Structures are given as C-alpha cells and as structure tokens.
Image (cartoon, rainbow, N blue to C red; front, side):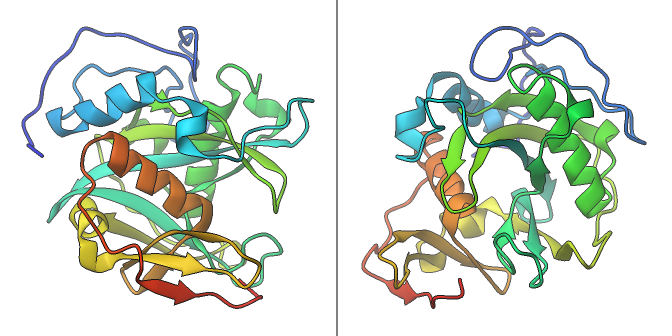
Length: 252
C-alpha cells in the first residue's frame, strides 16, 4: 500500500445506489453526509472500488429479511493514518450491555427518527452520530466516501449499513459513557493483515468465523467478518492459517 494522495473528480454516491444529496450532520462537529472520494489517500483506492462493486452475498450469508423486518442501524468503518500507517478505529463494548457485551466493534448503533430516511442518508447520519456519542469523535474531520451493502445480524435482529469514512482531520477520542463503551482504540491495518494475528473462532453453538488478535483484544463476529471481507476485496489479505482455532464459550 502506498501513502501517496491521489486527487479525483468530485463525486457522490448513495449507499448501494443513487447519488447522495448534501445533508449536514447536525452534531457538534457539523460533518457532512455527502459521500465524496475526492482527495482520499491513494491507498484507499481498492476500498473505494470494493465498495462500488461488491455484492451483498460476497460479504455475508446473512442478508436483511425480505419482508423488511429488522432494526435499521449503521456502523462507521473509519480509516485513519497512524504512526504505523493506515489504521481502523474500534471500540470495546461495555461488558454490561445486553447486546454483544464486551465485544470489540465498529462505532455504531440503531437509527433514530431524526437520522432520516433509512434508505438514503439515514445510515450515514446515524454512523456519524453514534461515533460521536461513543468516542467523542468530531464528525467535521470525517469524510464519508462509501457504504457497503446492508447486512443482517440474526442474534440481535439488526440490519446494518457499514459506512466507510476517511479520518482526514483526526480529533481526540476516548470513552464518553463507560456504561456503553469500555475502550476506544485504533488498530494498524498492518496488524490486521499479519497472518500471526489471524485465527478462526469456534462457538459452542457451531459458529465458525474469522477473527483477529490485536491490541489485547479478540475481534470476532460481525466486525471481524466485515474487516475480513474488506481485506480480501481490497487485495490486502495475506495467506493465513485457518486451522488455528480459538474456542469461544456460551457467554460470547
């Protein structure tokens, strides 16, 4: 991956389809929900292309219910530049939460009515709002550049839009509400692609999936699955030993 910055013609796109209208996010930072690829670093080119071309079935076998059921939600997949190059922002959910307690995840959550239309800019607005609420992130420093197809988390009933962002102007982040978030941290992409940090988790219920042992955390489940697919379709994946199993217990 190169750190060279490549300028592109300005363009916007709605999650999975039509162009997004400029719609300012009304949090403290005043970020924008328009999707723009102009001015992104060149190393994000493969991610931009993957977001444009990937099909839902190439990301997961769990897709939104055909009857429109499920709770609409969004997560922010935020790429930044750290001391070791490209990195991702993650949180560790509080252990007392009813849904996915203690798991590392992307910032995100359910759409609120004020986020707007779940089929247009609603998920973009929700991703920024939730990231601000959970990490203190200033949305004004985030450039949204794409969204992956909506996916489904059967165990919680969430229909999730993964929203892609570039942290062009980093701001301080940390735990805002300990009842919601236990930790906020970044993970170098180099560690995510390192075969030594890759394992397969095995749940007693039969689930098996990719996972990452990074930053004193085991990243698994929905978050690890999305990261795994991004690495694959961006061409960043390196061969790793899928027979290295890490067992989970029933409380996971």
